[in-house]
Amino acid sequence: MKKRKIHFSVIYQAILLILMYVPIVVVIVYSFNASKHTTIWAGWTLDWYRKLAKNRSLLEALKNSIVLACLSSGAAGIIGTLGAVGMARIGGKSKGVIEYISMVPIMIPEIILGMVFMAFFAMLSLPFGMLTLVLGHTTFCVPYVFMMVKSSLVGIDKSLGEAAKDLGATEIRAFFTITLPLITPAVISGMLLAFAMSLDDVVISIFVTGAKTNTLPIRIYTQLKSGVTPEINALCTLMLAATFVLVVLSQWLGSVQRKG
Figure (tube, rainbow, N blue to C red):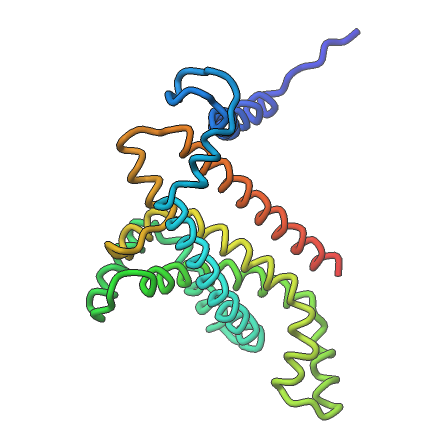
């Protein structure tokens, strides 16, 4: 029998998967560790999840993060959808330039974007807190919705909207009756992706948050200085599960849109 050769690409992919997912598995497993020390295994327990449920500071930070993600993804959904629909009706050389500018927020390093937001909000004398967080997160979330809706609009037959107008529908009614139902899966998919990106952002949030407003990623980051406890591991496990569900749901809605 001939021996199967192991290709370099297989080895590379295996190493890559190990480096990516082994740390995640370790965090999940140690969230059930009975020992307070993360380097010592002392058996299985759910005590850290119970303590997490009683930790008011972490729960308050979690609430702030969820509210922030909902507001920013909602605003990004509206702005990104309207921008993509408007862009689909623009022709000429300026279209490519505007599309490139629309993608800039996700191409700029977060630390630079955070510093720009901080300087800009300070110049406007805006109080740092939830308002500046929503504005900052909405800015870098818009491109995700924009890209999803833009790709969805490519597969829509323009004659459908034109037929609605011929039958007496106004521009706005044609949009809500024909275009919006067709692109709804893409809009929801982009908003879910934006929600996930907003939920775990640290760098930009540090620059634009206030002293009285604390998000969950910032709370975890600051607590890392005093050492990681299984309670943080439990929280990270729950966040990983929530992010995974959102990403899977986003991809499923995207596949539904492509099949439709």
